Image (cartoon, rainbow, N blue to C red; front, side):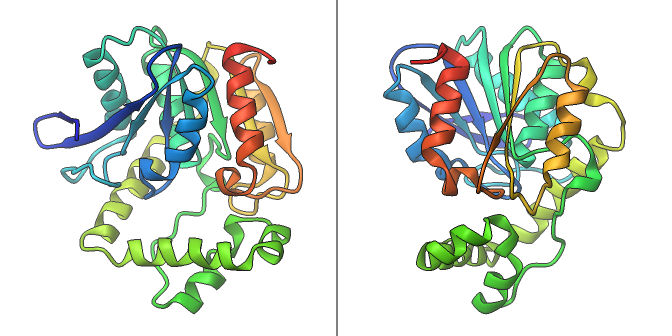
Length: 261
């Protein structure tokens, strides 16, 4: 298991794929890179090399308290440097999309392209819970905005399994403290307005039309903030495009990097 070590932190990462352009996948609030395994394998089959990172406060990474979004961005930049990666595409989902924006701002020479999924550049668009469900029934109620109503109705067992996974994870030792640390880092970073306006690389914004966690207006605002950004809306989809529309998401990433197949 590869780790990148800083003074008080151990950041887990792994790479998938043998050849082709590099891209990094950054996941959402409290989620780990395990969610990306199938997507990473699909992208690797398109001759892309994928870098997976567990953000501080998630997965197998350990983190000292008081980290910032700039720290999370620096983790990716330093891991890339350790692997002799000169340029890559950064794909950020939700909370990870804000990290991706920070990477593009702070390390413009590293980021060749930026792909932002189900995310925003203003804190009022984020709903990051400070409380977590105490049982599975409550989890299914509180987590229902993660996916569209149509998906829940068509895939009840899959939605239940998703809720169970999140609920069980929230009961792990130290989880809630790490979640609060991520939440604090995000809100502090978004206190400064106009962060996205300094992004200069080619950028694509992907958002589900029925996203109830980060509403569609956030995507329009982000498109206005980032110079020459393109917006792609996914119909009949909510916040978790990785779950609801994996094929469409894979195709969009591949086409953004390599062009239409």
